[in-house]
Image (cartoon, rainbow, N blue to C red; front, side):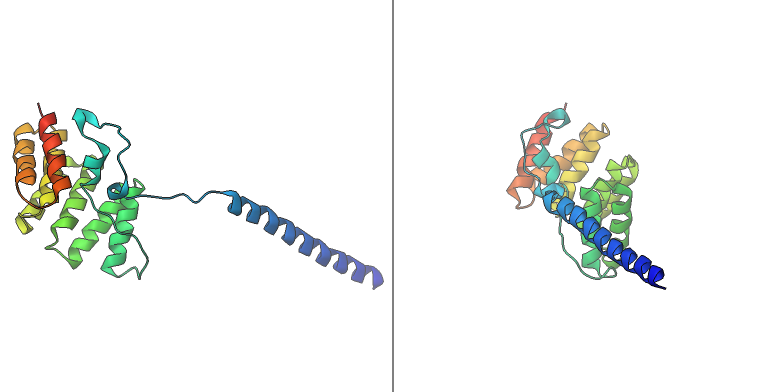
Length: 191
């Protein structure tokens, strides 16, 4: 019986020491790792790098706004945050699914159509992206950002005249000066 008690006592001490060692190693690992910040395209500052055809990162960033935070998964605001996080992380299929889901809550929101259109373009589904962007324009033709995105996608697929028309509309209509400037730069880059 004494031998049995010594065995279990040594096992208990071993377990405690092993647990403390694991805790110390993992604590050390997580306290030394810098937090990784993720940014949505609208929060990226231009580092001066240039996209094809003279389009800057800040021009691309203006195509889709972002919002972050936490709330219940059935809440449209949470779905929007999830969609934006997926987009930021390059998980475009999940982002597209979330934006589609958002449209069931608010089918008259041109910003959702804008974000969905841009996401579909990044998935290589540009024809579908153009349809969704045009759906958004039908909902709200005064939305300056969606005209910018429509111009961008059209320019990327070689529809120069459609791109020119959309970018001109984005440059001439709306009050957001940064969108107007992006549209002007994209217009200048067109052949």
